[in-house]
Length: 85
Image (cartoon, rainbow, N blue to C red; front, top):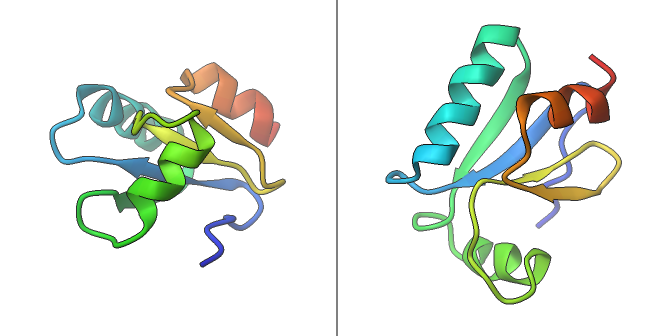
């Protein structure tokens, strides 16, 4: 499955208990930045994808950008810079 998002948005892999994920979602919402959230505990195959992107670790939030690149636990400024917002 291709999780590459549309231009101007991100795909964020998260878990329900992740405080860093909640913080990033709140920041994205406050800035009006669109995202698709995917809980790696609920969607088959996504935990393994996150592991591949993070050298074997299931670290969240893991974000995929429209250009196909990924970032682990990015700051709001990192996301804005990457999206040129």
